[in-house]
Image (cartoon, rainbow, N blue to C red; front, side, top):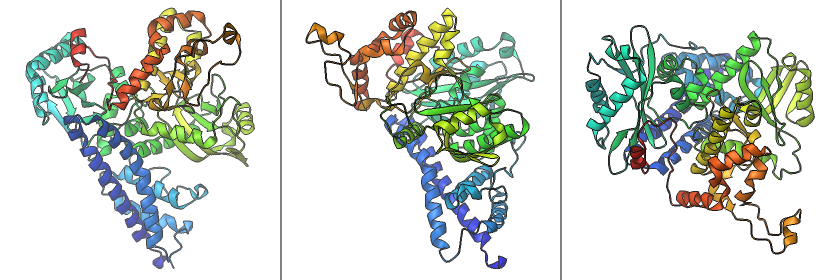
Length: 581
């Protein structure tokens, strides 16, 4: 009987599906260079969304192909799948993307079987690959040694990473980058005869930028190095700045950003390289940042089950105002929140469960511009009952009994999203200093404006729906009312017909389902009068319907508005000159 079970052939066909996915992923990624050179910004956004959709599309294709090819075989004999797994291991042992192929196998298994069939015998709950291959073959990099000539080194770097479009003024830019490099590093570093610069051989692309990524090294110390490049459409390529601060580079690779397009023949090597220059980043976040979000999901899950197995941490309700649509819980020692949809919403929320799910999935496919937390969607999470504080479990069972089920000593979470945990902005402001309040409200307004520039309207802009990251950035994380900015009808409040109109509890004018009146924002957003006045001074233009309409006009005209993921050190005059890059 065992000889008739075609384990090797099933494994081979699963891997064929993976190769097909990888080929299409590579084709989309390789097109990033041309899109950058030709300033095809809308095409870049479309390619990013297409690459995200690609994984699920190819999983579905492979599942259907397996069912069709083995139509005469009971493919769902789960007790035989350990044989398939072993045959698959034999096939992937020689590959350079073997960790990705394990995750692909898991996806195909879950496409075929219900989640109660999942075990480490039948799929890769734990990887059979090395966890972190920091000492594998060195990543594909280019090494530069200035030997006392930093300007010459910078010129060689730019020359070796040249594009089909020439640099606008390489002499000017080398001089400027040299000044920034000297400003960024201690004096002794620039004079160190052992100084080297190591750059990853492939350029990283995202939105309207290209990025050279690497590190600066002496014998004893290192600094990350990122040089963003802009295409000034008709003028040439310009290095925009030079970044060596680890916190700034971490923000560029943030969970709030869209995924980079970068050619990585050996993903684990590149992740190891990034891990060396950003040691505070989790492996899951690094994989996700370069488009392998399913691998990021696998790494996250493995970190989670390891945390639960090795700590006494227990789930508790997340701090902050309870949501009207979502219930949110967390592990105090694990920097993540888990969000489930309630069975019943507040009467003020006129939306359905399906709409909420659609909104959260939308976030995965749009440009998050550093202002929306990435999410991972999970089905059928099973956790030990002992890992829940009783008050937390009681609340979850009360508000979402169709999603949270106790099965003996296990808690089944049928459906949830995970997000990075942040401090809710309303809680942050309660204990913030005057300077912290100023900075937070300034960034809160910038977050709203940058989301709008990316054609996203948050809908519910209350402070409780925004969080503050460890870097002090304000990020939106509650998605049940988001929509495209161009779908909103921004209006001014009509003048009252009679004095009595203004005293009425009901509006004296008609309000359509997509109508928004920015003049109403101040009283809805701020109960604190001092915060209301400060925000009006910082971002009062958000209260003007014409401001929003002007953004809609630009987006409808096909303009992809600039949102930079780093601080720009150029002079004011230079910034003005570059505003239309």
